[in-house]
Length: 387
Image 1 (cartoon, one colour):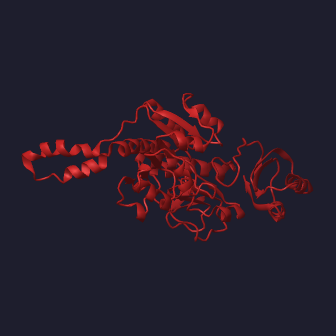
Image 2 (cartoon, rainbow, N blue to C red):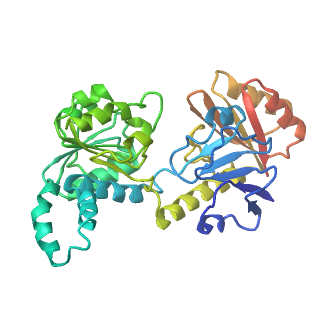
Image 3 (tube, rainbow, N blue to C red):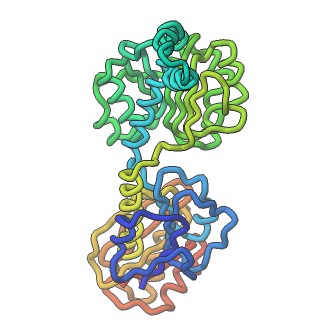
C-alpha cells in the first residue's frame, strides 16, 4: 500500500485516480509521496520513506529542491496544466490595462444617488478613462513555454503584432507557435519596439529583477507591462517611478506586494492565474499520474530535479537508481550486478546537470544485499527495487 500525504486540498478528480493500492490523507505518517500546491516545505522534515513530491502547478519555489535531490527525492510539477487559465487572465489584463475599465467602474459607483443626472455625469466624465485598442499594437512575449505560446497565438488572433523571445525554445513549443509570430533576436529588441510586454519565464537567479531600471530605460514611452509569472521578475522599486513619470502607462501583476497596492495605473490581481476549477482539476490529474508512474514503474516525466526517463518493463524486477552525474558510474552498477550474478535485460540512463537516473530491468530475484551494495556506491543517493 502506497502512502500519500496531501499538504493542500487536491481536486478529487486527481486523488480518485490513485486507486485501491493507495491511501492518502492530510496527516499521513511516513509517506512515500507528497501532493502539494502552495504549502511551504522548506522547513519540513522529509521522511526517509519519501520518494517523490508532486506539485499540482508549475512553480516549485515552495519546495526545497537541492535538499530533495541530495536525498534522491524526485520533484514533479505540472507544466501546461494551468496554461489556458493563465492565458485567459493575461488577455483580460491586456484589455483592462488599455481601456482603464476598473478605474472607470470604480468611478461609476461614485455616481450612485444622482438620479436622472447620472447619464449627464457619465457623458461628462468618461473622457478621463479613454484608452487605446490593442489591434495593430506590438506585443512582446518573453518566454515561449506552455503559457507564452498560448498568449502569443491568442494575441495574434486578436490582431496584434506579436514578437516572441526565448533562447531555450523547445521543439514542442515551436511546433505549437503560430508561424506569424515574429522571433525577436534579443530581449532588447522586445524592449525597444513593443507597446505591450508580457513575461512568462521561471524565477531564478538569472531572471530575478529581469524588468528593472536598465530594461525600463530601453522601452518605449507609455509601455504596458504584464507579469503573470512571478512577482520578483519585475523590480518594484524600479517600476514605481516609471509609472509616476509615465514611462510605463500601466503595470498588471498577479503578484501584488504592499508598495504596489493602490498605486495609480497598477492592476494588482491576487494571484488568480490558475484559480479556475478546470485548472485545478488538470493539475491534480497530471500530478497524480506522474507520481503513480514513478512509484509503480520508476519512470520520470516533468521532474524539476532529475532527468526525464521512461522505459517499458521488460524484466522480472526493476532497479531504479538516483545518483550524481559523474564518470564511470554506470560501470560500477554493472560491476556490482555481475558480482551478484544479476542478469541485466535492459538498461537506460539519463542525466540532467549534476544529477542522473538509471533504470535496470533484471531477470533475477533481488536480494537486499544487492541494493545495499548499490546504495553504498559514492555517486548513489537512492536505490530501490520495483517488483
